[in-house]
Length: 163
Image 1 (cartoon, rainbow, N blue to C red):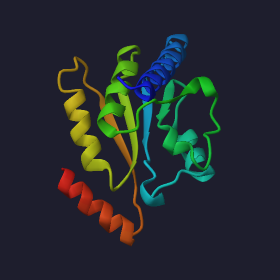
Image 2 (spheres, one colour):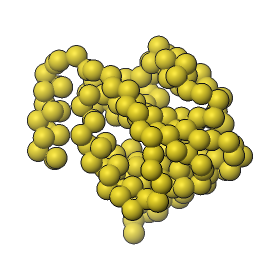
Image 3 (cartoon, helix red, strand yellow):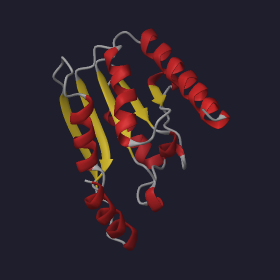
Image 4 (tube, rainbow, N blue to C red):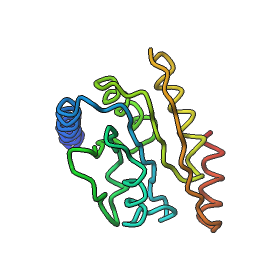
């Protein structure tokens, strides 16, 4: 294994442990809000308005999970012990990491916030990761429609080929 890969694994492990500590401290978590903006060609870049809407929709027993990519423009104005910044950004790995956090809690409700571009991939990868999970979840989607553009068309074509 290369040195850079070892450093990345150590960093990811450190992030994962820090996030698990946050979860252990908050025993009353029963809902998780998962943000899926991946910043492809700036198609969806969460700003302060985006985060304030998310904060308003969260209840007191909920957690926010997002990738570092979602924090490019602004950070959520939520207590740092109420949100997790993940180590992984690829959708399948992202769900695998989230599954570990969910397994450490009593979460039964998942709110997925995503652009209209990512929904098919999110659903596919969610079903792969949670196919043998022993719990049924109440899943709610909050879809953000990205305006038509050249990059949105390119991204849709790419997603269709990947799918």
